[in-house]
Length: 243
Image (tube, rainbow, N blue to C red; front, side, top):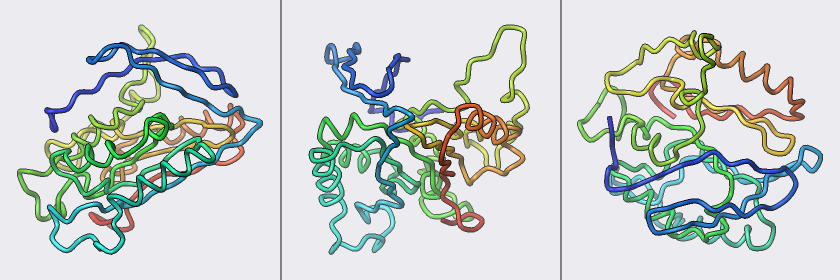
């Protein structure tokens, strides 16, 4: 199952040392790509920006965006300016990412970000409009069902967790039943990480609590073991089907 097939993404696992900036080199279609990253140490804390429902175009939902805000231009300018003065440790997107259907709005926004901003650690969870243009009760063939979202952000989710040979882990208890046909499972959107002394847990509100199995308990054990000082739960929904 694929969406947004005109785009390409690749990923690797890299070792980084907290507290120092490192330059990593990756093989890319256009040749070697150098990326500067800095994972803050547990002692230094972390700071970042949380963005919810960024609306850059009313292309798919007429009248949705307020043109006076000009989010398409001003939000990238804001992020780039902050990163030049006081580099961010993370950026969080809380769903309804640009109200996109085919990936063009997302790509347009990302091209406006500076290289330094693009290298900032990113965490993102899906909103209702990352699954449906309108709502599950008005499903359309163009709905990306979270697949385009999952492919673009390519996050390290529970779906990618390694499984020891001959052993079961907590993700084996996840109920793979999905609420709507064609939708990826709950663990395709579930993640937990620590940046500095902050724990982040992201999940999809389109999936039931039961469909996550014991993933929440697994994340809590991780935060306890790693002594996270703060924990942020990243979600989107405020009522069934809407957010």
